[in-house]
Image (cartoon, rainbow, N blue to C red):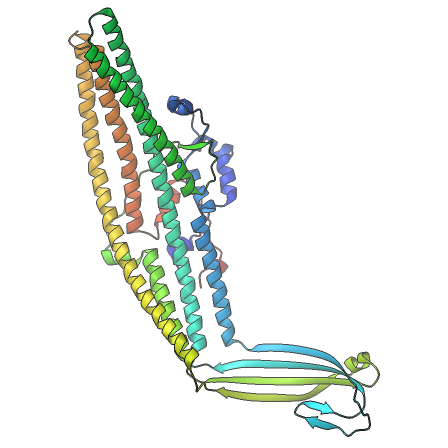
Amino acid sequence: MSGCRALALVVSSVLLLAMASAGFAGDLSPPLNDFETADGALCNDGEPVQPLGLPVAVAQTLNLEPQLLIAEANELASRSDLEAATTGFLPQVDLSAEDERYVPSNAGAPIVVVDNTVLGGAQTKSAYASLSLQWNLWSDGRDLAAFRGAKAGIRAAVHGVDEQLDQALIGVLKAYSDLYASEVTARNDAQAAAALEGIRARAQKRYVRGYGTEVAVGQARMEALNAAQTLNGACRDLEDRSAGLAKAVGLEMSVLRRLRVLAPPEPLSNPLYGRTMGDMVSSSPAVAQARENLLAARMKLHEAFGEFGPKISLSVQRDYLGQNVDSFGRANRHIAPEDYRVGLEFEQPLFPLTSEGSDVEQATALLHKAQASYRQAVLDAQTKLAEALSARREAERSYEAAQSSLTDAEQVLELAEAQYRAGRKDLDAVEHAQMDRDAAEADLEKLGSQRALADWIAERALFPQQFPLMLLRRLHLRVRLPSAGEDDQ
């Protein structure tokens, strides 16, 4: 039984209501800052926004994400296949009852029995019942192969839920981080556009007063125009990222409403290390699912070969009969045991065996496909692991470089302000230094979000089974432990 399924990582709708209530309101909905209150005016669209914290986004994903719901439904369907496979080992018991009125054409004719049909004799009303048992004693391994294949199918479906859960959580983390980065970019672009518009206005005033140049005015105007166009692109990207987060969460958003995030993704407190490549790949839910599908395909091939073998079954039947000349009621009240039959049947297919051969060919093709899928799953897991670790190293180095760049920009801004106070720099130079400092700070915020996302993706690649629980605990979301009856087969 897989780790995340053992903890039943299900956040119920009760949790969603609780988080929307006063108990969680203070944690998930802090007071809006200036940027948040002016979010609609930022892009000049006046659209209402819906704040969404990462805990709520993850909880909504676990309850609403369509692909995760489909994977859970597939698991339930696989359990019904196991129930169907179990019936091959159990006896089949049937009860039949019949009331029959027999009217002969010649009541004086002698009674003649043809097979199981009685002809002649007097008119009578009969009540007949039969209790029969059919039990498959031997089927050359077909039933056992079907049972083992069904159990492998359940395990594959469980690992499929685990894999889809990991993908859904990573998807919402990535969409949340992308929206946060877009908001930081839009905020910085808005500040830059406002600053460049101020520079353009001052250049215009200097030109009107006679100590400015047309070149300076034109340059300031083009910079302000480019900043406005950049802001428009950032606003469009904000809309796209909001729609992407809504899709990742599984929300149906109105075209007149968009999401906004409250804070960057939570970074990992204590990243885990120290596993071998083989352990990390074998514990991947995708690899485990492919491995169980391969086992199920092998059992399907054994089941197909079993169709060529003999089948032995036991049959037991007990008949009950009641008769009366005048009344069905009296016939039913006087029903009593009659004969019984016990049979042992041997069945061996001999010719033409075309159906059995076709089943073997199809099962062989499915086995080859499952083998290739397993190999592909292993290669994908190895590649994703290498990419995740490389992305983590890149994000860490980029964040350190952004910290150094922000330090340099702050020093340049301090120097520009000092020279402005000394009369050696104009206000435009200070504004440009401030814009450079704000851009460096925005880059640091975005790279910090990307670093947190890279950490989570790397942890998911390293510890795929523990990843959902790690994330939910980091976000202070509750999990429900399963009862004993919910254990996997």
